[in-house]
Image 1 (tube, rainbow over the protein chains, first blue to last red):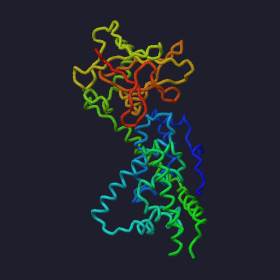
Image 2: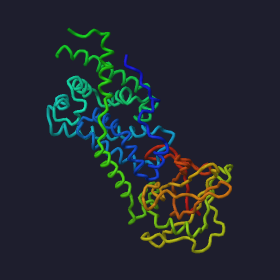
Image 3: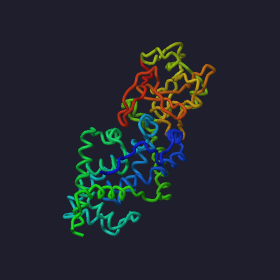
Image 4: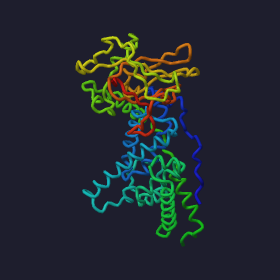
Length: 194
Length: 206
């Protein structure tokens, strides 16, 4: 059984005063916010996107939207769940576009091979095992991959995930379970071929 | 040899650990993102049209040139009362008391019949150190030339500001020491784009 997420852990969180200053247009405060969440956003986007090379662009798009919308940000909602709501939307849109282009122009594209190919810029986690994980992850439907990542990697609670995805808790739990079952079986079974 | 079923849980845990590895923070990427975000926030300005007269939810029109004028003039022809009397849960009163002729002001480049109406915002917060008002009329404080309007504290802890606002429906909120606060005396509406509530004011309502 995977370790339980601890959504209350304020790891790398930005305090309310910094968010308040960024809300009023303080770009120094906004820089702190980007610094604090950049790594997590890249991590999520790289795992989420069908084309991981778009991660930088998607994260930039998300932060641009965040800064423009910040004056309307509600303090009741945890900042990072609002940020991931916007980032997840950007990734969903990008994946739709990628799938269409893929169908139109690239036949028989092996997403797994693409992910495992050596020209990725995510060298920070490049090793044989992470390639197995990424290949298995890429086989998941987008919506199952998204909730799996939000829950187990980004450690959001189901309540926050409801706000991020707009999907009900019961459906989210089902998707997380399906994704977990699939990855568990795939990764355990994968050793047979190795 | 295949792994045993009981090991499958740890297989998943390993995968999750792998996926949790964070990339390094790329300082150049961070400054690129901030630059793009700041530029985008400034580019929201479009002074050539006043679209929110016909489409109230658009936030493109600018009345920034009017901010200083109204504050300096202190004209209070139309008054929107905030929390001075919290019991008042009716629509903000746009009291046409002693509105002097010519109290309205033409907005540059918007045609002679479009005039901003001086509107007073009021919020009682004796304990606050900094109170501002943000709304579609000042681009939610996003533009450098139209920053969130800082309100003035009266001796009784009542913060006020006069702003010239174009006629029409507007949404706004107060920012009290960095936290968004709705106007307890105004009706609220759901923000169509980002969720959450906003206070609503209709300026120039007959």
